[in-house]
Image 1 (tube, rainbow, N blue to C red):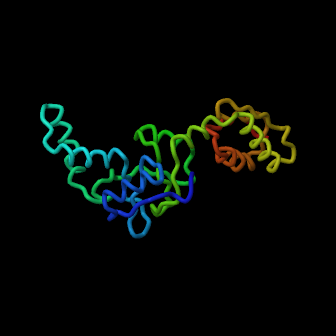
Image 2: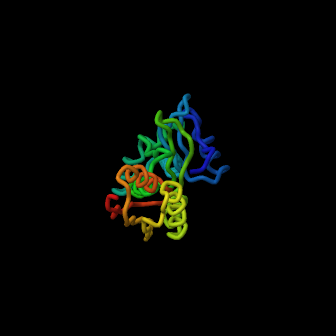
Image 3: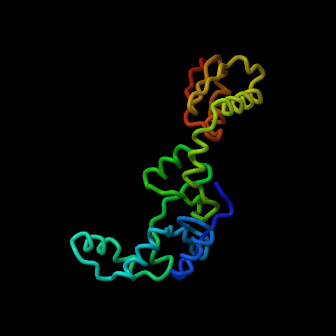
Length: 202
């Protein structure tokens, strides 16, 4: 994620929100309350809706009426809080990259606010950041897994590691007292999508 994250307060006027997006070259920003809790996200689309309705308040025709119906609330908003989309789609810093990517794809969002367990803003992750993470070279993941196993086992050669498209397969003999902690640590490695446990108890 990227820190610090640009955000705007809920009472920021429409024009200032637009200037913030332009100045920071962003398509959207989190909207926060006085305690820095994320309460929504305001995007260029939200601002564009208000600007368009302000410019052409009586657009005619069936498409125009549908368009006006969807944008009615936005057209009457004057602050970030009244223009924003809510509830916000957020992710936790410890959330897996693949889960964050699914959230962004499902909600069709370019940027996701990252919040702590109290909902306070700690950063922002973009679709580009997630994509780069998901296509990380398997050899780099393999090297990190090997290093991790080397720190946990007296004889790392007891295990065979393969990595394909972020999926780590672990085969060999593994002490059942060590297995849960070790496999959990492998799952926590950034960009590991899944761990296939093919070990047998030692």
